[in-house]
Image (cartoon, rainbow, N blue to C red; front, side, top):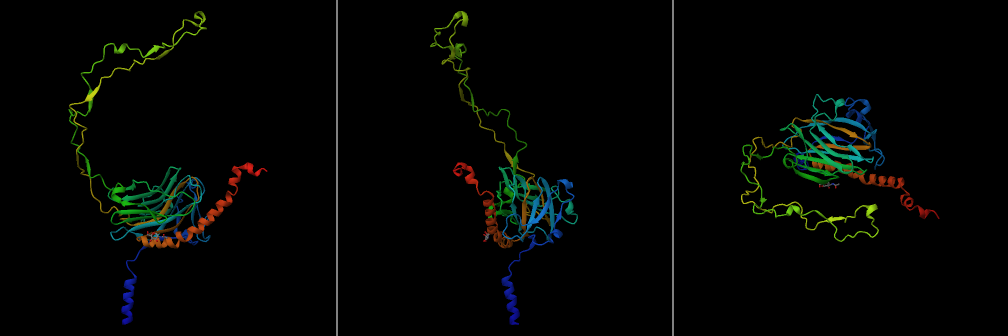
Length: 390
Ligand SMILES: *[C@@H]1O[C@H](CO)[C@@H](O)[C@H](O)[C@H]1NC(C)=O
């Protein structure tokens, strides 16, 4: 009896709210192809790139693989079902986390993940850029000025996918980085890169989930006789007599006819023209304060009849989400994805990052640095070539 009671107590203390994990994918077994389906029917075969199962060129553990885009200038599509469907609810966060490593010098290409409503009719072989999605999250780079982390969320009220209206940074170097998105039932969100918060806020403020609360009164109009000119021409100011007779240029009074000027050969000598210091340009009357000025007209605002509050903005998977997928276009390929988790607990995602990303990152960086050093061993000497010539 005593034993049983203790056991029950211990269990109650040790297990607080249990985190749910909807997907955990490390790509570390050959069976990954039975979970993931390539989008073979999305585009003609010649437009589709293939995925490599590899640890890449630099890694901390060669046996720890991910999936990598290969074949340049192609589309890439692949998806997998969640282990169990995720449905948004008031007692659950949504956490999506995965790692991205651009081994190529990425000039233009997406590396975002999508959480998909999928459902029973979902056809993985046809999954692509046109397939409906609940969340699109992750880095996208095109050129040196266009680098961002996408955060796009589905609004049920508007039946639209909404882009974040703020800039969210992303990493663009060649080592692995970790991207984490949290969407919470209090209608806030947060983005982490390498476990550091890079953006957080209210869904209502940073996405256009809601129509504006007020609009310009459609019945109000600027009165015809509204005077919004602050200054007018002074009616008392008159153009002085002879003002228009002042020439713009004058013959230079200091110029002298050169000694060797020959009127017969060179024609009659004329002094070169210079600007007339008396000339003041076309006459303009003086401007004075307008005595009838009323200030700028301000359009009165009224409550927007289309405004509706939405306390379910966070419910991106209101009708359940069943799959994750990548659908990308890449010019130069070599982006490696790994360690995907979909859960309702940021702590669970932290713990997973601890076992994966944080465990591997230093070893990978060491190997990366070594490879880079071997690739360009003689750069400084080549620049100052003369020092070698003795
Ligand atoms: C990640 O962030 C969380 C919360 O800020 C922190 O508790 C955890 O220690 C961090 N993990 C690492 C490995 O830095």
